[in-house]
Amino acid sequence: MPSNPANLDQDALLETARILSQAVPADALDGVRASLEYLHHADCEVTPEALRDIAPCDLSTTNAENIVYQLAVEGVFDDGHLNVEALREAFVGARLIAGQVDPPKNTVVATIPYDDRALDPGMFEPLHANLLELIRSAEDDLVLMSPFLSEQAYERLRPALITAADNGADITLITRYLTYGDKDFNREFARGVATNQRLTSATAYYEYIDDETWTTFHAKMVIADGELAYLGTANLTHKGLGGNLELGVIFRDDTASRLTTLVENLRQSEFFYQVSVSGKSFHRC
Image 1 (cartoon, one colour):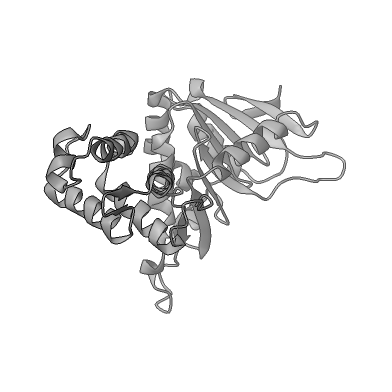
Image 2: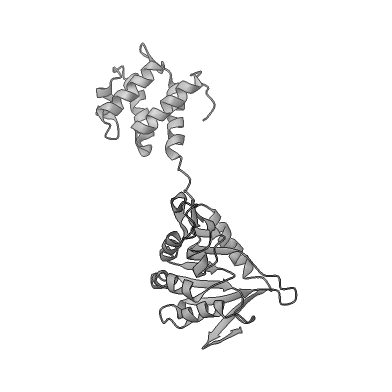
C-alpha cells in the first residue's frame, strides 16, 4: 500500500480500498473517483443514487451504498468537506488490489503403489492422469526427459502424444541408452514412437552423456509449450506411472519457462547428441 499523506488511519484506508476494489470494475475506478469529486465540487449531495446516476459503470444499489457509507464512516466526506488526498489514496489502493493476480497454482502429484493400503491415494493428485493432461495440452513444443523408459509406458502415453502431435507440437525425447548399453527398454519406447506414423515426423531423439566419464542425467521432466512442466521422481516407465511410490509437481508458474531454458542450454552441451532411428538401429547424427 502507498504511503498515506492524507492522515487517514492505515487500516481504514486499506478497508476503504478493499471495498472500492470489490464494488467498482478495475477499468472504471478512475471514473468513479472523478464522479465523486464532481458531486462534491458541484455542491451536490453525495448519495448512492447520485453516484449511480453519473458513474461511468453500472453500479448496483448495494455497491453504491457501500462506497458512500464507507467514505462517510471514514471521514473522507464529512459535513460537506471532501478529503481529496484520502479519496485519491483510497482509489490508488483499490487499483493496486484490483491489479493483483493470484499466482498460478502448482500441483503436487503422486503415484501410489496399488498394494500398499497404508498409503492414501487421495492425499495427492494422480501423477499419471495429470501427466496425460499436460502432454495433451502441448501445441508448440513438448519435451520428454527421462533416463529410463519402457514399452508399456509408451502404450499408456501414446494417445496423449498423438494428441500433442496433432496439435502441431514438436516432440523432443531426451533419454539414455539409445546408442549404447545392452538393455532395450529405452529403445523399445523410442521404436514405438518412430513406427507410429502420427508421431515419427514430429519427434526428435537425444542422449545426454559424457562417453569418457559416463556423466549423464537423472532428472525427469515433461514440459509443454514452456508453460506447464512436470518435475519429479517418476521415470516414464510403467512402474513410474503406476507401480512405485513417486512424487512430483506440475508447475504452472515461471518454473516451467526456467526448465525450458535448461533444456535449451543442454542443446549447446558437447554431451548432448541427436540420435536417428532406422528400423531397429540407433545412430548419433
